Image 1 (cartoon, rainbow, N blue to C red):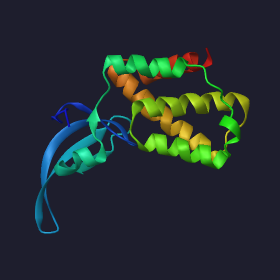
Image 2: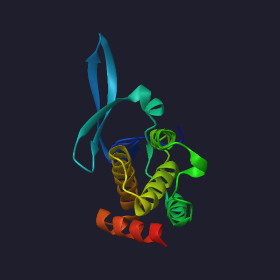
Image 3: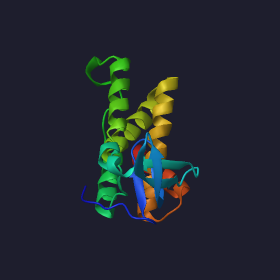
Length: 165
């Protein structure tokens, strides 16, 4: 990992969003004394413990840089066909969206959000698609707001404008 997790810094825990690193904590687990990183999610104040030796494995990373944010905005503005590509069954497309969100890549998350928002303009989304949309929106909004130092509401409004143009 090129990035060093330090107390007070913001970090992204893939699938969970942006969190502040609060502390290092020692705990005995299964007879072993382990060191945990204590995170506090910004969105809902949930406390998360991650074993220090598993940080790379879980994909904990720094919040995106401004250059990466610019690329995210470019992805959101990119015109693509919202319809299912080439007759791909909706279940397969749904799995592809899920897999992209699981990667933890902010760029994959941006693509999922863009594609689902555009698809929503053409048809009513299924329950599963709506859940994926909200998850992608939450993850992307949190990280863009943290990177740009603005409120989440402004980021959400900017996303709606970017995707519709």
